[in-house]
Amino acid sequence: MDTKAEPLIGQRPRRHPEEGLLAFDPVASAWRFDINRIRAKSYTDNVVDLMAGKLKRFSAITQEALKQFACLGNVAEIATLTLVHGETEEAMHAALWEAIHAGLVFHLDSAYKFLHDRIQQRSCSIP
Image (cartoon, rainbow, N blue to C red; front, side, top):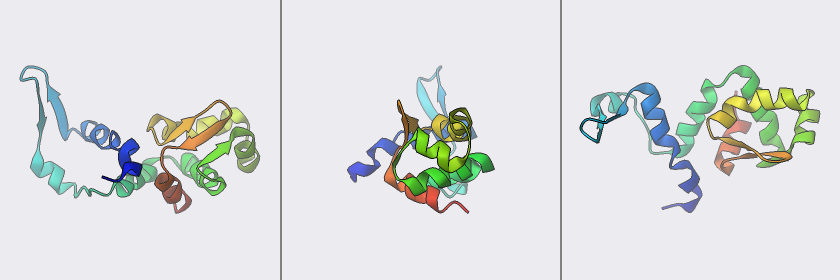
């Protein structure tokens, strides 16, 4: 298994409950899923495609902030991001909140960091 993908492994199960494709049945103490609905979604095993799908669902403000952040690298100082974004630190945090909440970006003490370099790369190519 590619160790670079390990931080992303926990991302896939989160998506299924959001869409009602996978649910825990507490009475049966088992996970329940509808394999036909999952197959109909045409999920790929490619984690990058899964992450790209999340990027496309973010607001235009978040997508623009991610593009600017991605051009600066995998980690960027907040001061640099605010300069590039042309907004306050609070506005930058608000712009990245969807990506932070989705677990694709981490807010460190004085910087932001992408979860994985492939997410950074895909963020650069957001249309």
